[in-house]
Length: 415
Image (cartoon, rainbow, N blue to C red; front, side):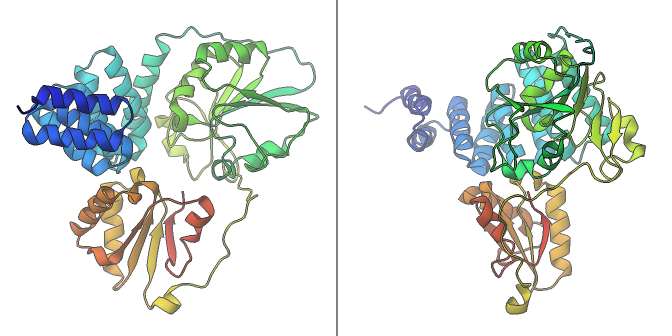
């Protein structure tokens, strides 16, 4: 007697719950061959595929799920994440907009947060819409927070400055900021690192000072961390996360330090009107964009980035076109940054430079289905597969070496 679809689905779900993803995916597919109209089968398959990084296949499965059950919002939430992962940001935000409209409080809050995070990447959203989306999410967060409004401490010598970051141990991230942190005059400043996930290290460019204080706060709730910031008398709290580590941004709503600024990870306003400023410059935050910021823009004279290369990078090599006979463009951008508008722009460049190639390399392109998705998107713009080189992620040194290695002449972006 053949197994019932419900029993097959239960077995697939059990494998999924144990983290046996290849086996779960095979079990879901077997279930759906027998019961192709089963919403939970397509939903489970889409979630399992998403977890493995097979975003294009996940999108196909979750679209099938939402066609079968249009009102089933959890499938739309995962669909939104998979679409975003491959740069289909506008479509992703359409899913979240529906969830924000129709979902319960938990799903609505999730949707508002995801729209706020991805808004600057969405070509359908202008500056006013970006500000509105971020203020909407911040308002939802603020509803459950009672600010501390910590007063200024009486002057007692050193200014206590706290750097809040989840990437303090990441050399690629910190190369734009550690130069300033290392240059602090320790006779005037007491430097605190408030670190999620990893702490500053020599590898991330940090030059150790005996008086510096390093806090490991991974998993500490924002409410408790706010109390610690206040108890330790931090005078200036500098957020180095922005929307790149979104769960910590609401910490600023507690007003735990008398002066609070955000330095990085914004690509627009934080949405927090009570913030003392977002650090920028005239190039990234031109004065005409001030109306689209909830907080004041604090512009430095030159650049808000302070690059200090403290680790080995590949040597500069001669242009590979000398040997290849053709120009190769390249981008190491994450897949979520390669939106339809970006694909269209790069395709125009390739069509305008006869014989040229384009190298794309990121972690998502290590998966065959995701590569096929990008090939199809470029083919729709008149760029055949033989003009594209698609590669997966690598160690950072090898990743950068992609820009030489007899392949790439020009780089659109290095991230």
